[in-house]
Image 1 (cartoon, rainbow, N blue to C red):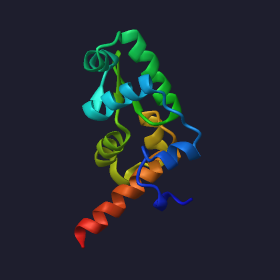
Image 2 (spheres, rainbow, N blue to C red):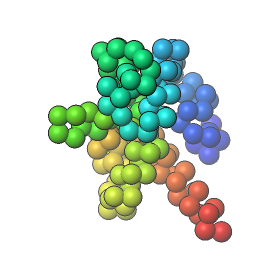
Image 3 (spheres, helix red, strand yellow):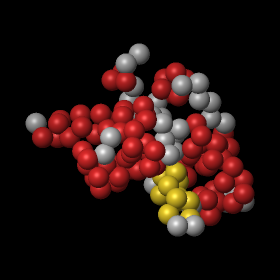
Length: 129
């Protein structure tokens, strides 16, 4: 299966191909990050109504799976929706940064960052036509 066959990083085929299984409690945390786009564990806890420590655990798990980004700014850790994170940092640095460097900056796997960049380039070409 090529990346072009996959609609996005939340496509069930993509998740299964990577061996990612998301339980309902973790899915609730993922939904919060997708909705909020950029949030701390406290923000996610307020959104879900669960304890911050539980949300921190779920956020760390989702980041380790490679489906949410993680950026540290000073003493705060922010979790970002991946497409939003790549768009923000790619617009900031543009072509001067490689996908691998960008992946390292936002704490995500490089192959997922490359896939998101390709999707962004494809959609921008379609918009221009």
